[in-house]
Image (cartoon, rainbow, N blue to C red; front, side, top):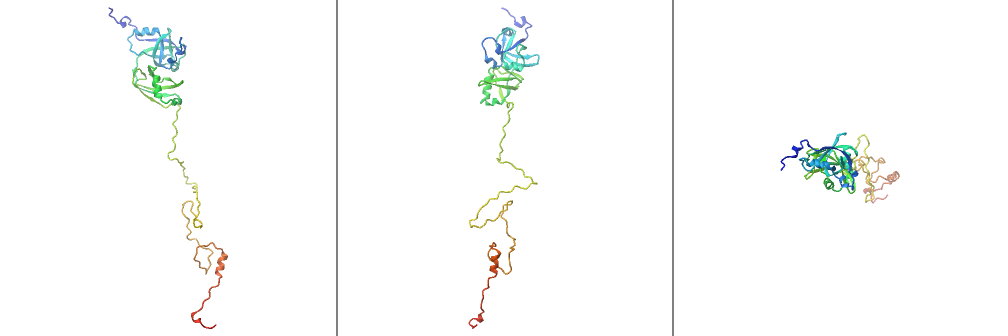
Length: 291
C-alpha cells in the first residue's frame, strides 16, 4: 500500500549519537541488579530504542562511549532500554575506565565492530593465580560482555572476590565484538609476579680459588695398623706417604753392625752392646797341648 522507505521520509536520521548523563548501576531505581555491574552492557532510555528501530542497523547493537573532556573511550553492548530520559546507567568498572563521575555528560554512539579472533589479558594482581582454572572463569565472565576494547580493565568476580584484568591486545582491531565468535585467549604474567629462583643443578656450592691465598688444608684421617705399629705419615697436600729414604742415622758408631730396623733404642743400650767381650777361640794346632 505504502511503497517507501524510512530513509526517504526521514533523510536526516543518520546514525544514533546522543549525549546523556552517566550514572552507576547502583543508582538505578527499583530492585538492585548486581549482574549488570559484572558485565559489559549498559542501560539506555526508551527513546534510544525508538530511534534505533527507524534505522537499518545491524544486530547486535554495539555502542562507543566517549568522555569528551578527557578523550577516553570504550565500547559496550546494551542490556535494556528502561532508563529515564536523558540518562544512562553504566557498570562501575566502565566508569573507572572512562574516568567519569556520576552526573557528567557522556557521548553514546552506535557503531559496528569486527568479530574477535584473539585477545590477551593481564591480571592486575598475583592473587589471580589462586584461581585453579582461569580460562574457564574468564569464559564464564565474558558471557555477559558484547565487545572488548584494548586498554580496558574489566572486573572478574569469582568466589565473592573481584579480580581486575587488563585487556592488552585484541585482534583484528583495537575494539572487537565477542558475540558468537571463536576467539583465542592468552594470559600475560600478573602485575608484580616474579619468576621462582631455580635451585642449582649440581647441588653443591661453587668456590673460587684465589692463587694468591694459601690453599685450604685437607682433613687428615687417622687410623691404626693391625700389627700395632705406627701408621706411616701421609702428606696433607699430595695424599701420598712420606718417604723415609735418604734419612741419615746420626747415632751410628764405628764398629757397630746392626741387622734390625728398630732405631728407637737409647744411646746407653748401644754402648752396652759395644762393650761386650768378644768370644775367645782356639787354634787347631793348640788343641790337645798342655798349657
